[in-house]
Length: 262
Image (cartoon, rainbow, N blue to C red; front, side, top):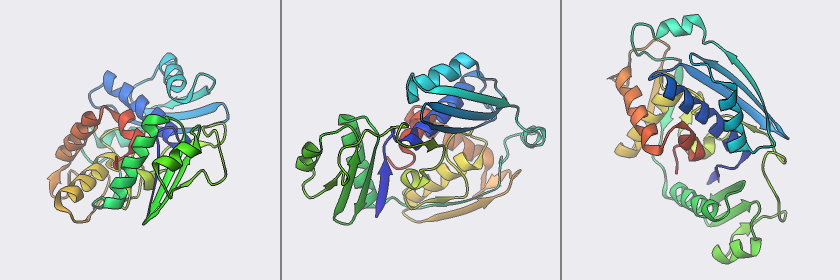
């Protein structure tokens, strides 16, 4: 049993905005320190960023307009990273937070639902969410003809309550609220999105997930702030592995669109 949401779900819109601001920070600094939280809905987008890189208002405005829509009003608060946390990284790349992580191989059912979600989203790029539970397929897709979806997926339950418009005028969105969609059976004590690579919530999660896919076995890890090794590897290597993975997807915003299961 698995649920997947698409990039226009309000929670994923929040993740994408956070990811886009992290992308901007990386254009200004090779190793910025940034953590972004986004809460949006009903015409407002509240953003708090703890960051070593100041983000101009025009970047905030254009990012929110592009991802959430031109009618959404940004409310942005920016503060510097805590000085004690900053000192943790002063002598080299070390773990930026405590965390627990479990990477799990993606099942065939989870891969199939991710594929279905991608196909539907390519045709109807609007708010949608999908469940696959054995032979039961539930499709909730806004702004799409239910009759066409039923013809494409015979037997599927399509929009059980009827047509809907979706988006942040129907539901609010917040960063890291759809980790089940992003990670399937993998588990984390933190969130994947809106953070730089020094954060274990990003880099160690990616490392555990990728290792589980390579080995076909679950991977369980923990770390403490300040650790210079995790899973027997220098923390700097784990950060570079995550950097390459994020680059391969096209950046943090692209990572936020579908998470680790895509």
